[in-house]
Length: 117
Image (cartoon, rainbow, N blue to C red):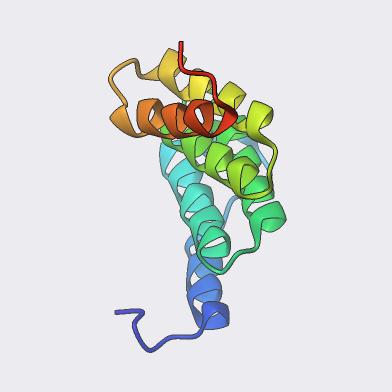
């Protein structure tokens, strides 16, 4: 679907998916997922700071959204902020102790840091 779309077109599509009213009564899990998808669109084109802002919004809406923590951790990893990434992977695992991606990502950082225990 997006194979021929530019990053700007993809982002515009994600932007259109989010129409959140200003009251908390209208915010739900779908909004957190939409912000997470917007973050992923930024991540995929190397816009890690913008992606982090989108993941922050998803986490604000749903503080136990393990995927948003994991993806934000990936951004920190790519920015070289490994300790912050580990904190996010830990938070993802607190929310979902069976989320294998967070275990894998955290393990990769520990490996690169030479922390094998």
